[in-house]
Amino acid sequence: LEIEAREVLQAARDAKELENLRVKYLGKKGSLTELLRSMGSLPKEERPRMGQVANEVREAVEAAMNAARDRIGRLEMEARIARETIDITMPGKVFSQGTKHPLTQTLDELKEVFIGMGFTVAEGPEVETVVNNFDMLNAPANHPSREMTDTFYINEQVILRPQTSPVQVRVMKSTKPPIRIIAPGRCFRNDTPDATHSPMFNQLEGLVVDKGSTLGDLKGSLEIFARHLFGEHTQIKFRPHYFPFTEPSAEVDVTCFKCQGEGCSVCKGSGWIELLGAGMVHPNVLRNCGIDPETYSGWAFGMGIDRIAMQKYGIDDIRLLYENDLRFLSQF
Ligand code: PHE
Figure 1 (cartoon, rainbow, N blue to C red):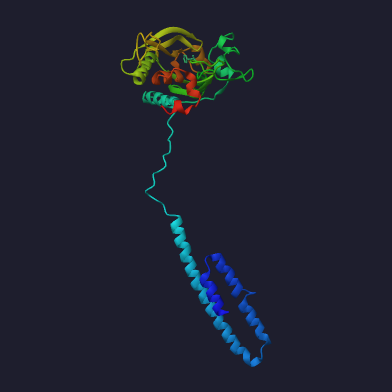
Figure 2 (figure 1 turned 90 degrees about the horizontal axis):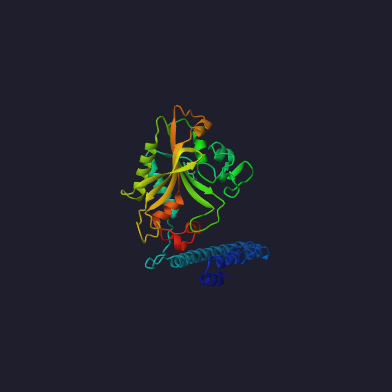
């Protein structure tokens, strides 16, 4: 028994085999146990001798077992080391890294300019009330932008905001002047998509309310902003316009920074591009929001972030900004 056990233990190749052998020789139903059990049938005087022999055999088998366990342990460790070796001379995997979306880059830059001018960033919900977007903003009941064809209505009182201007109302109602905020965010209009229209787009609103705020402050601030963004030689001009919530109101153009005159595809030759709407906050709006127009005055502006991004990067189709085509996005 001892000789046989030694031989097979030496040949055992892994832990599982070893365990099977342990059961076979030393287990409860193993050969050695059986041997001890069979001692009962021996004559009394032979039993101690037989017991001694059995113990010697068990010790020998256990010793062989331990030796085999050590040997197998070493083998397994060697195999594992070989298996897990890392070849540091292999070429590395190249991960393609994402970049910020051109709209995000533009927004980051806009924020930086306005934060540098003392503005803080405010936010409002994309789902707005008719009250905040139209009534409080002094929009006449029959104003065309109230029509279904322009604004997405969820029901009679709730809309997808078509502009960021209702954030003005939220801020004025919740904050005492002086107020100096910008409010970027998504807006929605029921427009058929084409190169210059997207039913979802982004605006950046600006609002200042303080004692003695003037149209001159508005012009100066927008000029500083335009020069930061488009270069120090940029000019701006105000064209009279109408918005229900500002009086006077203007559309503001800037000189095209990409190129000028004939052959300029970005600015269509005129040398100017329309950039934003602006004006002095209408006294009715201040009053609606609980601010006394005798004490305070304010100015506001709103610009399309998409349009600015398109200007900056020479993008000729607004839809590219929303299609998530990596061939387009990876250029920025
Ligand atoms: N909300 C206007 C628009 O969407 C822009 C604007 C904002 C005009 C603030 C004046 C003041 O066209």
